[in-house]
Figure 1 (cartoon, rainbow, N blue to C red):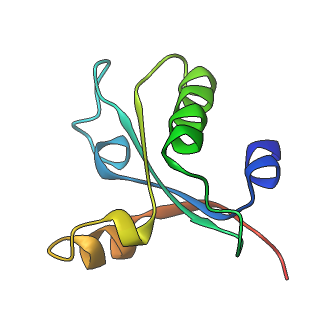
Figure 2 (figure 1 turned 60 degrees about the vertical axis):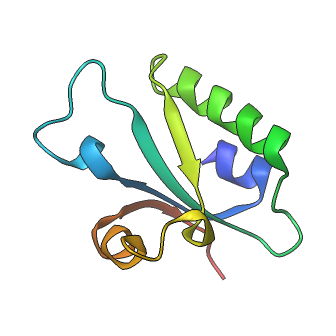
Length: 90
């Protein structure tokens, strides 16, 4: 996936309502990413990535998170249910 290579993403996964039956026309897309060492973007970089992904997902709002961003109260549930779409080889 070009987006992942361009942005130093080691792993790209979808989680949340996009994987459930309650996903509808107004639903956002929740994305979980892990970055290569030294490639984690700042806040403006993340916002740019969300806009780029929104274009790829037909204009839907995208919430991009890393495992560290997730609340400890539901982090493990997200990690257990997220569906990996891209994983860097090697």
